[in-house]
Length: 301
Image 1 (spheres, rainbow, N blue to C red):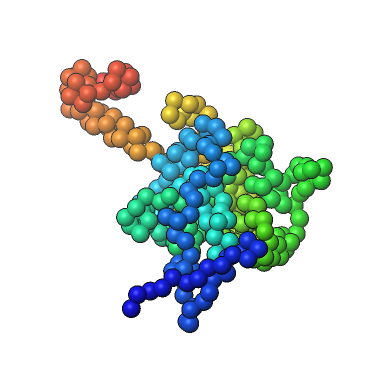
Image 2: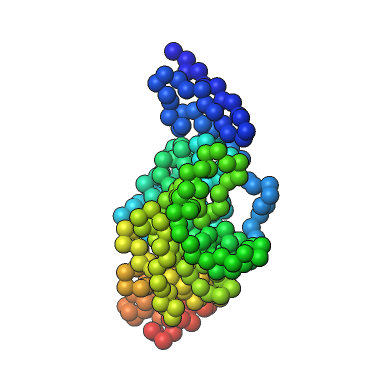
C-alpha cells in the first residue's frame, strides 16, 4: 500500500495536521532538513572572525571518553528547528553538541540544519558568544542591563515556563534563553564574552536554569555526565593569541587539536631518534622537520 502524506493547513500562522487513525509521528509528517531553509536571510554570514575560529577550537579539542566521534554531532551557526507546531521556528546557536546521534544525518549525509523531530535528541551543551546586540536574548532573565528603558535582572523562572506553554498559539517565537531552558531543556548552557573575558554557566536543575558560581581567577567547569571540562585558555590558535574557550581533562590539562596531536607525535618521534644518538640534522631531514621544529629540539640534542 502506498503511504499518502497527511493534509497540512495553516491557520493564523499555525500548522494543523489532519491526523490519520492511528496518528502518525511528527517525524513522518513534518518537514525534514531537506525541506527547511538552511540559511537565515535576516542574519547572513557570521558577525566577526571570532565566531568562526572559536567554534572550530571547541570542536577540534572535544574528546568524550563515553562517546565515539561517529556517535556525536557538533555544529556552529546552524539552524536548529525545535517546535512541531511551528516548523519554521528555529534558533542558531553559536556552538552546540548533541550526543547519541550519528555524526552524519541518517549516517549518510552532512546536515543542512538540525531538526529535532527528525533527530530525537536535543543538544547537551549550547555555547553562545556575547555581542552587544544579543546580550538580552542570550542571558534572558539573568541579563543585568536595560532593554527599552526597563531594568532587567534575575526573576522567577515560572514566568518563562508559563510563556513556553503559551507558544502553541503565539505568533512570535520565544527568545533563545527561553527555548534552551523550557523547550530544548539543554542541560549545560554557557555564555562567553570575549570582550570582558567572562564565562557564565547555567545548569538545568529542576527544569530551570541555575547559574553556577565560577572562580573568576580560573573559570573552569567540570561536566560530570560528559567527563570533560571547559575553561578559558590563553594561547595561540590559528595564528591569533587570545583568551579562548577550550576543553580540558579532569586534571585541568588542555585537550589538543588534531594538528597539535600530530605535532606532539612528530616531536616525540624526533626525541626518540635523538636518544639513539642520531644527529639533529640527519633526524630533521628524515622527519622533514621545519626549522622552528628543529630549533625546539636543540636543547634535547
